[in-house]
Length: 404
Image (cartoon, rainbow, N blue to C red):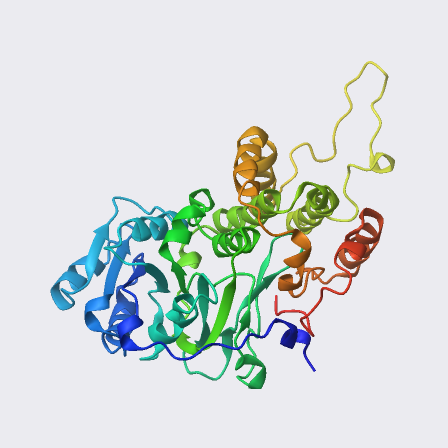
């Protein structure tokens, strides 16, 4: 039996219509015209007082006619049109800042459709004071599999979606505490969103929701998974339009930034060396360097004399763009140490809850994406040596490793 029941919560009574708050639903769009009809048709059918729903499309410089179609077909939707692609995190913050007297802000991916009770159920725990942020049950487009039933994280900042690819079942039906609300379908008390600084705009995209969720718990609040708030996800291919190395860079950098900002001092000193080692190992695998490479001295060809310059067997070795992206990603933190130390200090000033109370929300803290034997051996040895094994002892609540 799953140990997830340790995080279960019992929701209060349904919220009456008169107590439902005004909500701004922020839908981010970048060349997603083909998704908009299904998304907005479902929002138009919400079982929620119409005068209390403010839908705002934030468009990141689409050139596929998205904005023109929205203005022509759905005039009740407000539009903020950006001159360039600002990225997910900055555009969502922009949407929250443009709310109109709403006390709750919700975020919904443009490749989603929602159940009529999606918003009513999503804001319930916020209205009742049970949590300041909530996340939906996200299903595949045909409803046969779970996309997300709450979230967790491993020790070096890689977010995971509980239940991903599972067939929906009883384990996904209970409301519970979750480390973060998935940015694709979530709601948050607007004043708390502002007080915490919203999504970190420097992330651009990826793992900004993990970071916000962690900061929310660190500041003494709660985030809840609401299984009765249902959305279906079509899975947009937006990221595949970018060169893969540009996506890899932020997917490597942002988890490092997240752990650097959010762990307390003692735990960061324990975790950080192993986190850097995991990135190094991933970079090495991405570089695809052959085992018998000429850098070993016993493969070297000696110069004819001590005065002659030695000749390298491969003076300009090929290195993959993905490996270069990883190196740049790490340097974004290490090479800007003062800046990120200041950002870290700002986050730590929010602290009202110790790390130990947050660790159980990670679900699978010592999980590794890479499952090759050398990586797992390194992780096990370093975890024992640096103290991760002791730090996260008994904190694994997820019965199996998430799907990579």
